[in-house]
Image 1 (cartoon, rainbow, N blue to C red):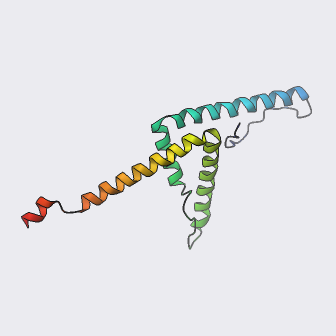
Image 2 (cartoon, helix red, strand yellow):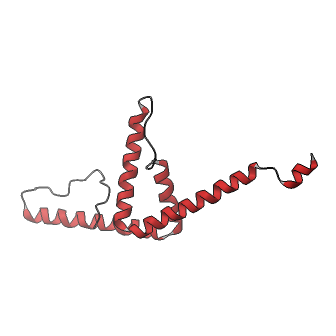
Image 3 (spheres, one colour):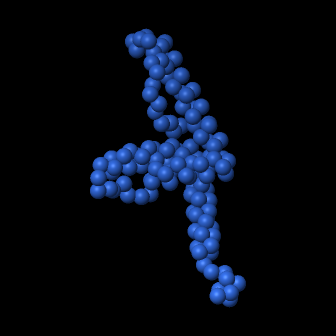
Length: 130
């Protein structure tokens, strides 16, 4: 089972030397991880969920350079690092749906770019009027 991104942990065990409390903490952590994994799997199974996740990865610039001439390189690296973590968890949860998301995103970007390019060209009727 993949490890979900870490949230700031709330203390689960009051006494780490108590075996019962340690077992309970392990059980609680497993419950939390399963809840996250199941939720992510559900989101990834929906086309709309894949659109949102793909957009988050794009915003994190996971496939781009973080280089900048100024201190923003550190900010960029942090965003990208989180994007890489999200991407790794998504692949662990369901690699096939991750690849589906990538194919859908590429197809949409190609169609979008074609639409934008077409809107910038003169239509035949507009050309004849001049």
